[in-house]
Image 1 (cartoon, rainbow, N blue to C red):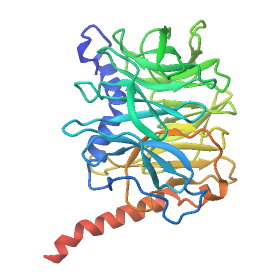
Image 2 (image 1 turned 180 degrees about the horizontal axis):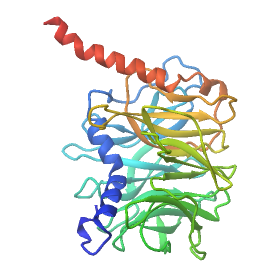
Image 3 (image 1 turned 30 degrees about the vertical axis):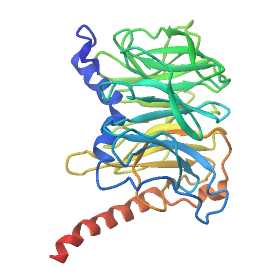
Length: 377
């Protein structure tokens, strides 16, 4: 993405920024284009109780014609509604959704109206769907929208000055933006901001000239000095929870996969042990009870993503269990999630299956399905 800035960061930084900035494109282009996922249009409420059919997240899901659309997902994992639609002969990837505090609108990043799939602008759409509206203009790339708790400010990352930096803008009554200004963060690149519960600070992923990423924080008004929180070298996508704990993904010492960790009082704590899969893009529920992420299952042969799943942990459980929001009608590969700003029914959430057991069954079914034509011969 930074190829058009020849005086920009080093090649190693370019590689990690392109990898992070193109994460949704990679997962959609490889994982979602696989035989797993994409089962058509919206599904109605088919006998499930009201609690299980209440919205819990919005995520990116492969569209029937290719690309990625935003869908709302119920507490039992079923797709409720398709919120954004593509157009014929044009592949859109709608990603990085973010709710307004009242839950009525979504901000998101998309390559709509852009010539490159990995160059995005910011858009809005109603939570019930409708025609998306573009709210940032220009040839640069804007991504990672995050709304302040009071709904007054939108924070996002943009390469409008030649490298990805942190910006904020005032949100107007019609959800458009005004008075865009940069928040100084020093050298390097900035991605994946998250707003503190009181709206006074931002935590973000900082990428240095060597390509290492660590977590930093800064005052949300841009007046203070940035402060480093972790040492890296691969700390990613933080989410600031109601209790003050910051969830993020990293590869622990001697671990081949990326897991969820909490940063509490300067100390990092493993959330749950999840071997063989990466847990990425942490997001907290409004009350801080549930920690969500994308569970990414990769090929053991070449490491390519095969299936993205919406996973979560109930942080109040004595023994933490990684569960999955699994669609009952089809295997759907999903990435990038926004958490609906409401409280969820613990009994309905607890009925969701354990992630790795559900994943094992899906992979077994897929293997049997692929073998069936050979056996028929």
